[in-house]
Amino acid sequence: MERWISVKEKLPENETEVFFLYVFPLYMEEFEMMVQTGYYLDGKFYDNRDRRYSTYPEKSTLANEGAVVYWLPQPEWPDIKSL
Image (cartoon, rainbow, N blue to C red; front, side):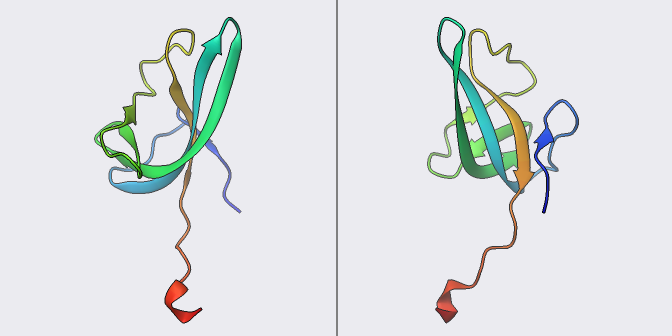
């Protein structure tokens, strides 16, 4: 099984489909986490549901805005036609 990769350690190759962990502040010192399916393109992580939505892992401080902190390559999806 693959392990989650920190964006500080390595970024995906361009046009890679990934799962990514997005962390964003709620209030005070509390944070929320959300796992998204999407892709990495030209230095940004994009959500598959809304192609306009992106995050910028290299510039976030997490104190004021959200950030992608980990990512994982997506495995090959099963062939659901044979179900």
